[in-house]
Length: 268
Image 1: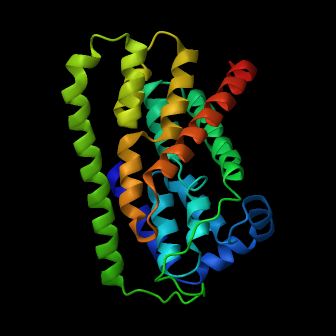
Image 2: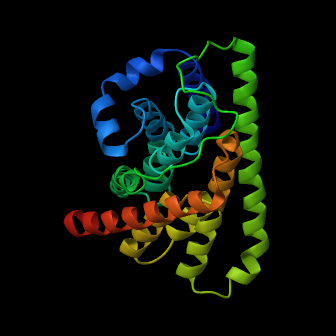
Image 3: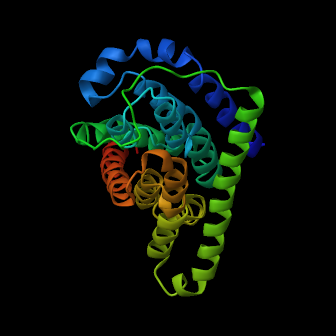
């Protein structure tokens, strides 16, 4: 069921990003986005898409906007610092209600995660990136794609994401004998740095709920190596450096963990 919903979100977001509807959606947030993040107002569409759908849709939408010449390469780099998030279905549904058996924990982690993303984008608002030689003046020249090309693009994206998840699940399984010698919190954290689903599952079993929430907040915002590679594959058109992507995810993870700590003090 989750896989089907994920495919539909990918597909409908692709439709929206191929038409002028993105401009209408982002117009409401034009001034705050431009002022806070120093990017094109259409960045709000990528942010909303990422928040609603989760990894790695924000990266995909950012890449589509760049390919449609609706944003510059500098915009794309900045946007990846706050438009690469997990979604409520995973954090609240799978992690909170499912793994922790407590929806409140899911809402707490999700709140920290999104606030962290919003603040993280401010850190990178002034980075300047050289445009690629093939990139011409940015214009809104996006044209509607035909249905078959949208379906094909969506299918390839979903296959790429699924393959990456499967590969890193195998990696974690291969490392399990080594991780078993480490303390449970350390092994769970390392697993989360590789693939967040398996990592969060292990983290949720830790005896200290507060420690588990902090660790889950960090690994979800970091995204894991699996998600980072998914995003790199989807953003190949504007050649996002892996070092910068890892740095952006690391600072997001730090901020989200701190916010989660504050929320724990207030609500738990």
